[in-house]
Image (cartoon, rainbow, N blue to C red; front, top):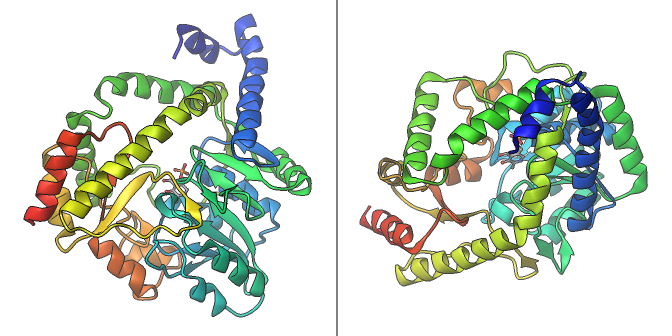
Length: 391
Ligand SMILES: Cc1ncc(COP(=O)(O)O)c(C=O)c1O
């Protein structure tokens, strides 16, 4: 981040601040245009968080209070929060071996009961996409793709995110596949959204700046692990904390601000390098898993995917996560519930009935996953394999 960014963000009333107002929309527009090209989408709109993008997309698809929206039963509160701020009802659909919705779960719904189904491409894997799309069509549901874990992945050489009406992507991006829907999204933005405040942008930027020297280090992993333990013990507040009541939609979605748009545009330019790293690390994980007799994750042959995380089913999940955590190794165990991080009575508050999605619940007890980004290297891989195979 540049000093100039700080100054313009600090004082929007100065001449540089007034210029920043224009720069803001310029950077956001630049990022949106670049992302639309990257995703082969008709158009893109950038928000502060993925849940904001999803809420606007649901409204643009005419989700009304009381409407039912199908969601994957292996997800996080961000997704369900977006459904709830529209006063809609999430309907949890159990998963298959790809950690995506099982198409049968959609087919057993009565025609017209689900207005929209959110197809989550978990860790980058689209599951049985053809069958999922056909099932949604059969029951008269529109589809949104959740590409938060799946940038630049394809199905039969067509980008994920272009199969449904629209998609939400990494870091708060919304994409649409028709001019009609783009016009409707813009109408909903005018009704409900506001840009992220300068103050919020500045605080976020400061946090990142202070945190940067530790990111991807062993200490970062260790502290992250201890924080997640503390959070689950103390129910500390974070962005994934269940609020007592969900806010009414007005003012909830925030469009991406100047700093974020600029940073995301840079990340987009650097994506080919990260993609290469993720592909190489995925190949390394598969080689080590094969040599250790561990199972590889099933990837549909139609899909060409860059995995964000590499999952594995194990017997002693929490022991492995703990051993990794105290050694500063990024062996993660989320999602730790069908609506991560909620548990116990909180699940009922978001309409999840315990026992209703047994395959997702069983998977949650057993699933760990490893990073595929630049934080992984051969030394860490060997240490992780040792922990996994020892237990
Ligand atoms: C599957 C999925 N969808 C959407 C999101 C968007 O979340 P947020 O609102 O925190 O950007 C996330 C974040 O982790 C996610 O895992």
